Image (cartoon, rainbow, N blue to C red; front, side, top):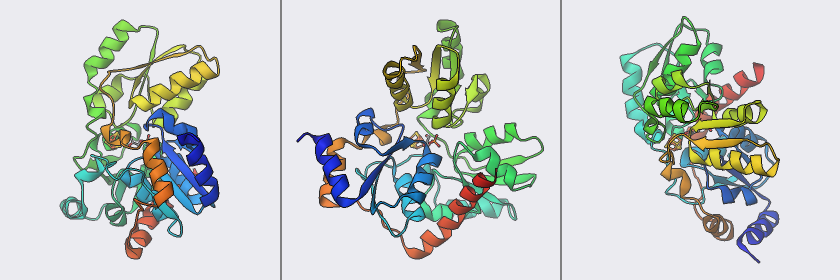
Length: 307
Ligand code: 13P
Ligand code: SF4
């Protein structure tokens, strides 16, 4: 039996599912039940009847799955898979941020630890951040940890001031406005699609800004044939694979060859097999944190479903 067959056999025997973020190494899709962005995967984690969830993503994503399904066992294949942005804020820093800006609702990007989520009013992901801030019906909010997503939300909502914590994604910040200008010169027939974690100047210059899944859906539906993608390489790999597989005749180009999130690339098929076989790397959280963090995520899911 090869690796994929072994994993699929164990998945069946243990009633396990594999949720995979679209920045993961593409070969992981072969054993995945669901592949997508943070919001989609959170929804899948909250509705599955599997006993075991293997989260092929980064630590905060596996934690979110545990928060949404505390009765299930959740595993991260490789414990080195952290998120640099999520690690930029802890409870102490969040409390300082709140103390400097008292009496304001706090929106917390899902790229954060369970403890930080537990101290916020509502969560959001990159695909629903605008709607979530709007749903609060307020003219001023605190937003943590991603300053660029927060500032992008502000540009989408007139009359709302978004006060942001100074966190950022080092991978997306490697994309510079010059990269967009070069892409326009080198590929004048291409549309440029960017993730809202990019620098505001980059988002301003792009043709479309959206979460990873929104970028993929936009590219699929568009009549254009060529796209420059300003987000992590995993998205480009999957789009080029699907274009070939389904004869879209479309070409996808990564804006700059360095746009790879090293933390997302730790998980391998070997790690997944090891996790399933030996039940190692389990996510554990105390009940109180789960309860408080779940409130923030549930509020997000509810606001999203009411949209
Ligand atoms: P998505 O919300 O698009 O899945 O983004 C998650 C992420 O970590 C982007 O860097
Ligand atoms: Fe975190 Fe950035 Fe990697 Fe996303 S791309 S997981 S925000 S470090």
